Image (cartoon, rainbow over all chains, first blue to last red):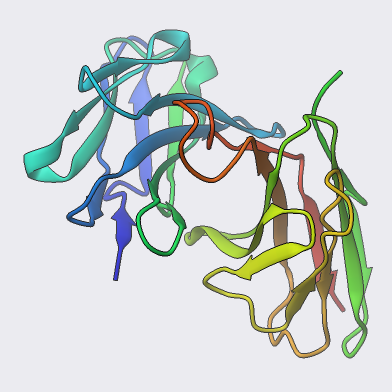
Length: 114
Length: 118
């Protein structure tokens, strides 16, 4: 069955540290990939997305993600985190061939210490 | 202001009662979705609707029902058959399900409804 794995459930970093959150999916066909973020008390919102073209995509607030097809991965990165990046991050995959599926990972809670 | 509204924010229900969660969008989106969010399990798709008067089961549809009589509205009923209904419920919408360019199936989320069964 198709799935999305986020290996880090909780991450704690100090401000200015670099961030990388892992996301792997299991599906051999064409996918669209997303990272969503949920700040405390706020709506889930889109951070960035990959549909086609350049596998390195840039999103809001200095985040970027790289799609590596051979590794079925779409890891999220930020060179220097801020306290305001404290949030829960969700990776999501859309499979549109055959039965439509929109699959979310289990989420990673990031806490940034000031 | 365009967006998705969900009401109520908090809902309490006695065991054995059905309850309906509201979701309205004014984004003129064709597709709408209901998710359930549980700690450590991420978001799981309950139902989705591609167009008015059509909806499909997601991964965890048992014990839930939906209707899509209007484009703007996609209410979710949590029935007494749902064995573990206490959760945070999120509604979302997108322009469509597939095709149409990179923004077509980007989902926009509402603020959620927290349902507690007493």
